[in-house]
Length: 194
Image (cartoon, rainbow, N blue to C red; front, side, top):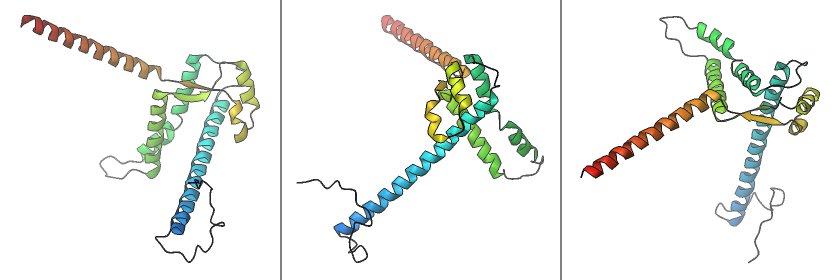
């Protein structure tokens, strides 16, 4: 049997207004509509992600002075902390609007800022992507960048993890390993006593 992997469009389907709901043609029309919706959704997600990615690059581009040729890892972490704290003033002003003793619902903007800040903190814990300022060549490319989304791929990116989170994780792993060792020794000694 020959596979029918041809991508149909609504234009190519004949007599689409006079079809039985259970027919093969109805299923074909449904597949075309679902595919169109899926492609539109992917395109929308891709453009929104590329805009947020470009906004992040622009923020870091303007945060680093022009006379700095390159940055160290510690300076990269300081920049990330500045980036994560960029909404703190607005968030504090929204919290200040709450009157003590009065039950007032949170503002929508406050909820949005809380969600954005939590998402960025989680991203920093798992790996935060930012422009690589360690190589002078990349710094030069970044400074010459005009904000065009098509040329974002020329900028080399760096993924950094929160050192505090890594230290806490290492301590938790070491604690779990020590507890496991103690439990196995206790089981061993109780087995020997029997």
